[in-house]
Image 1: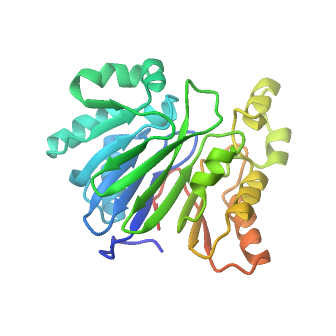
Image 2: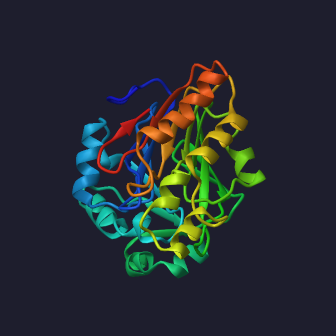
Image 3: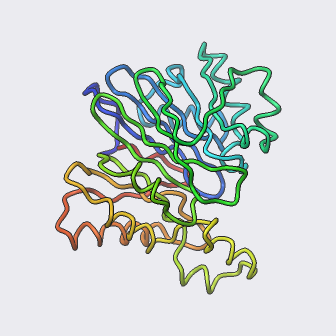
Length: 272
């Protein structure tokens, strides 16, 4: 399912980078070519190169959404907005007021961008794409996932959460594409080199979902409309890219579901 964009009126998800070293994804409304960026923790050079790899034009970025203030999601916002301006694109940047106040990256660029605040439960209208914001459970000032809709299609996006709230599960239901966190393998985390406090943070209710928890979530969200699920924010220290894919694929196989299981990578693009 990876390759250049198609003009079929559906939404597409391009995971440009996913992991603890930097995160950036793009939702594309294929009917118009309009692009919505979710987070930017990578360089503008990497952003441009990965957009080119999946056949999308960075100059078509119309909005940037910020899930939370942790630097692996925000450290590239300045270079992104400056780089896009040189291409003639001046997207609005959306963050909650609490995330704005907690993010030095957002504060540094706030006077040079069109910064807009949103709240949980709000439906953002982004050039033909609507994005419904819902809270996630993470150790940030605030953190959010999004449900994207356009042309009768739906993409669910959630990373950086230690539990799945009822609000999140409802927002992610009945999607054609799901991008859900599968951060760590429980045994690898337990036996790994991290100090005890960090292991407790990752495994806790305000940390990250494990492969097993991601599979359990997928089980609850299975629907005839689902075509693809992508395991996101995979730890390079406490996971192996094969394991989250296996955890998700095993659920699909057990239920006889035809959806495809993929994972997002830190250094290369996955497009669905």
